[in-house]
Amino acid sequence: MARPTPELIYALRQTAQNLQHGAPYQWGHMGGCNCGNLAQQLTKLNKQQIHQYAMQRHGDWNEQAEDYCSTSEMPIDLLINEMLNAGLVLEDIKHLERLDDRQVLLRFPLEQRYLKHNVRQDVIAYMNAWADLLEEEFLEKITLPAMETFEMA
Figure (spheres, one colour):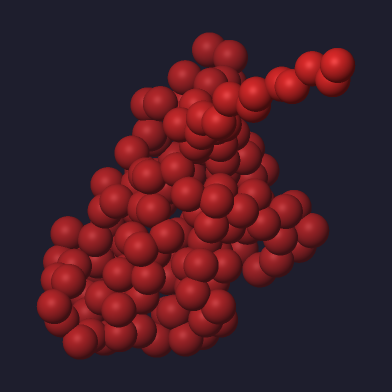
């Protein structure tokens, strides 16, 4: 599971909001699918650029994650590297494309856990639930220093 970083939590929420407000969504397009939309938010590249980078190597996001090489200079590997630097791990990319991370799905009532990977509203719900999960994990790790109180005489 991803490292809970403010950048990633914000990117998930913003991507969900963008999709809710009509951002282009096309599951079969590497720049306009689930991962493509999140990649747009994390990298500030547009969907055409992301698609162009991905087409320089074969496969969908699952295969791109499998073939990822941290020392490669291929544009898609540099893009994935940016996503990893924001807190993602390679497995997150695979899960996001299929909306099938068990920890995220457990946040939904049983009857709502069967999300369709290529349905905009399901992608929005998944991203929001994932952001909530990461935010909770992030907040659990924050400890504020104890404040001493001084009484006035």
